[in-house]
Amino acid sequence: MVDFEWYRSFIYIYKYSSVSEAAKTRMMTQPAMSQHLASLEAEVGEPLFIRTPRKMVPTERGKELYTQLAPLIESLEETTRNFKTTSSSTVPVVRIGAAHEFFRENIAPKLGSYPMRVIASYGIASSILDLLMEDKLDIIVTSQKLAAPGVEYMHYVEEEFVVVAPVDFSEPDFTKQEDLEAWLCKQPWISYGLELPIIRRFWRQHFQKRPRIQLTHVLPDLHSILAAVEHGGGISLLPAYMLADPLQRNKVKIICEPYKVKNDLYLAYPVKNRNLPNLQAVIKLLMQI
Image (cartoon, rainbow, N blue to C red; front, side, top):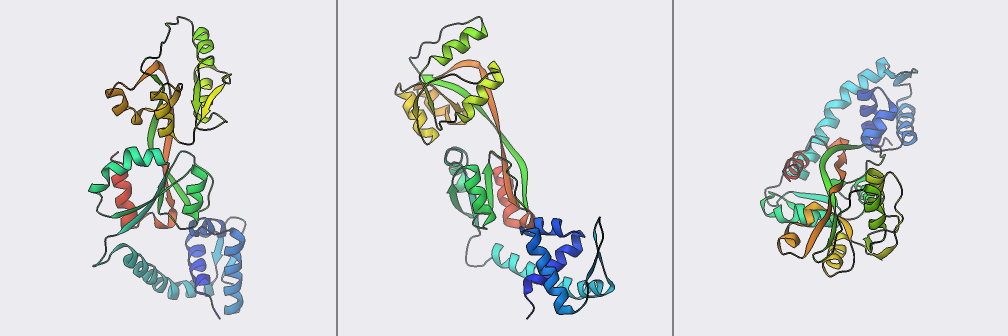
């Protein structure tokens, strides 16, 4: 019995003239895509492509099959997309993955203007990418461009991290950079990981060395770190977008102001869905941040 997925794989190989590119687009492994083609050719009883070093060239039989299948497959896929994205009785749903702090500060306050229902998932870059690959999310906001077949990245925004301290924290005035670096090493630092992810980047960028600091606390999320800083628990590097309210309320202050570090964020989504109306709509809304 012919598997419908064999037909879909055949269509993609025909369009891209490549098993590897077709596999990426369909978010499949190359061996699985090759097996689909081999199974279909066995069912048809003759080759559908001529394999060359540069590309897959369709045989006459392959061209004939494509001509008959393409309109049918495209019609079925269009029907499925329309069914998912439009409904007379329900509001469209978009599943978004992001770091908890970024979602809370930048996306959640604007959900009232979204013409759709949002289902959010929080996690680090690798975990939300896994959910995207498993088709459990439609789009993610990520700080890492991790290699993943069939996933497209686009630059989103640039975060700016600054050094934050309790409002009564005393900051000496240093004229030499090495004196500032030595002083910072002696301060009580708070990080969200023992590997000092953003702190290490800060030190490399400004002091061209690894940080030699003793962590006072390791806390699992940035809002906990901010609360600890507010109450005298130490200093840390935090995104500037989190600080408008605590700065206005005089709960914290920014020290070492010229010393900042930036972090790029990306939107990632399956290539196969790039033209879906709901995905395009949520990208447009997210880009307004």
